[in-house]
Length: 234
Image (cartoon, rainbow, N blue to C red; front, side, top):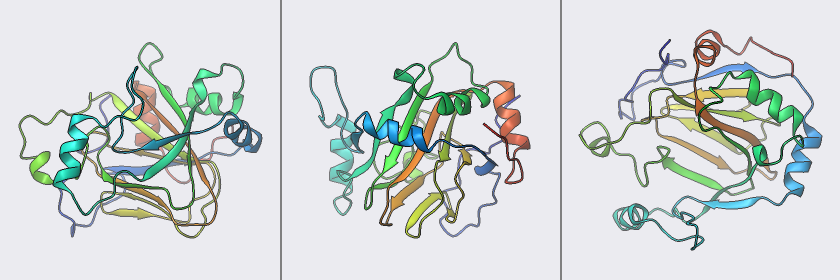
């Protein structure tokens, strides 16, 4: 079963996007993970800056692509902290609720799976971007560029909110802006070409799970059939 999302994104900022074409809410989880939020924070979150890339022997060194894009976009501030994270899968047995959420999404466990507790502090922001494409994701860098590297078609990313929305917190995927979400809201989106933004302009931290892996037919089925009315219990 292929991904239900369209690609590439159209890069027309005035075109109305329909939920389900490139991004959708596939469900709202019901459960209690408050203790695991605090446990994740107690591990010590790591700051993530968009234009810095960690290497084995040199922390926080800009990659060549990011240096070029910084010069190309002098009005931006991609050095700002985008969020703070803990890879909760690195602590087996310590996050049973987070693990249940991960397992229910049906990933191919024989392939790489990245499981992050994503904590966005007040005034953290992640600029308009495509994952793994540094800099401003213009049409000429994607659709008109024969060298643009699409993500593997079976790769997918989910963002799951762990607390109710607070005024000032924003997700934007393509031309759809999301606010007023409930704790447990599951977002999935077309990972290869869909630009998106997150910003926390509220007065409180915004915790989420960010889970990335290789989809199975079960994963695509969850996305295709899911909706705000699906309320699984974990």
